[in-house]
Image (cartoon, rainbow, N blue to C red):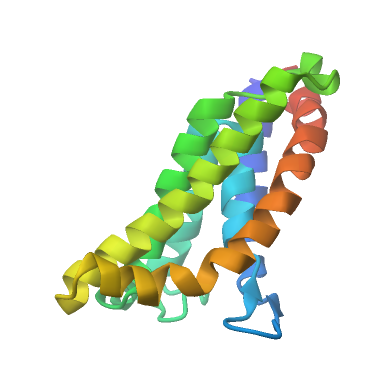
Length: 185
């Protein structure tokens, strides 16, 4: 009972982190500014695992659909813009990256090559899924080629996402054993 409650609390905390991170914008010298939202999306999956990482994004998406100011365009109207693809990608990224990493275990305090590789693959795939879903949605929404959608919806974000990836992997390695203490009691 306590374990389940803690997992839902962590899911709600990550939903809040994703929402709040929407407002953290770091200007970059070249290209688009760095927004931390997708970092917390991937962290939700890699730290909480598939089910609770997915739940955290469902909470975030539900809040946005109900009109909370967590999307650029509030409410269901967000899905009439290119943002809709990224929102779908957020859910899939948390789900798939969490599926790869699984629920955290305290034994992960000991850093192994297998865990580093697994977390790296999960993180890379999480960021890639967000961008891929955004590009595909942009392609269908605007009736453009995948190449044009890639140029508009993926290429500008690659440098920023690589920076976030470099942050995500060590954070996940450090936070998974800590989260395991509370999630697996």
